[in-house]
Length: 360
Image (cartoon, rainbow, N blue to C red; front, top):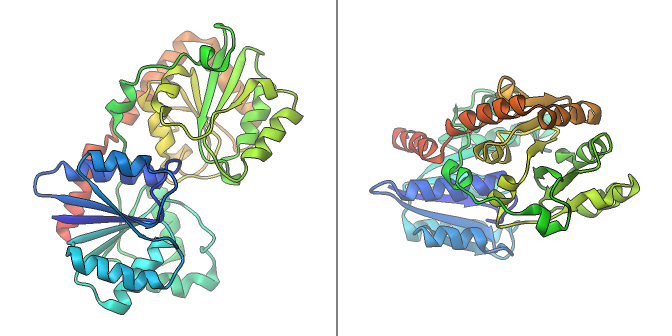
């Protein structure tokens, strides 16, 4: 089967991009498959494309402008040249570009869209008729969690949707060698590290985690791994809180598995999630995971991880202190998290996608 995954830009830092990296690699290893990945625009960071190419997955770039009507003709020509059986699309505006191309050019190919989030700015009544037309262009919509599917069906009725949860290469994370973080950031060996891997955007809410640090012992440090428009705002916030020396902004890193293995606790303080890749990565490292009790986290790991209410820095600090202060609890939570993550290995997820593709 010849499969194309289409995404806005194949850059490190997002959950959808991480899924495409892992899923395309796993699908390409299945006998008889040829898998390609197409970015609508040229990514500044070539790391994911290089990793895919090294695994035999060819990567292409459509144009230099993601939001251009010219992309419809370019995409039509590209698909006609390669003769795909399945096109699996991720994120907006790729969602619209592929749908409009299909409606205008009538391509002989099956279309799948993977829905990654419980909410977006188009989930308004004024957009509903347009959204219905776009989503109906796809032969099937994959929701990455039951909560994502529920939210989508509230917005668009009578949509053909199935749930296939996100997945990752579990062994890649569980076998990673820990980094000596004390040495890297220049602190004493008695320090503890709380890590969060996420884009710096409002919905990720790093500020609650920064405030929680005020309630923790001075030897507890925060590792912020990611980039985004709110990065400088959070740096200023940490300094304004008087704990700038304990909050370390590490940027986008290629050694995330090693950083997670070197950390003590991993947190995700989001406003909402679909099915968090960062959460699975943390759990694969056999570390205690603490998440905000919101859709896409709380409904998935209520009996596995520790939860706190969104923006409740006191509750978050209490959770962190609990696991750092109780070795038995620490080990129990870490083992539960690891067992949970193993259920979502990318090879099992790839088989579910293959079953869907063959059914269309």
